[in-house]
Length: 50
Image (cartoon, rainbow, N blue to C red):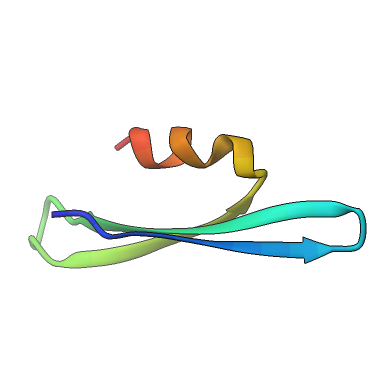
């Protein structure tokens, strides 16, 4: 199960996106959230990799 969330951020002339992905820990089995701020064109790559 994965949760995907993307928020658009605009700062001056740059357009950024904040992506949040839920990742399961292999040791404990608990879920953690991984956040990243990036260019909107790279969001699909972020969600595609494990």
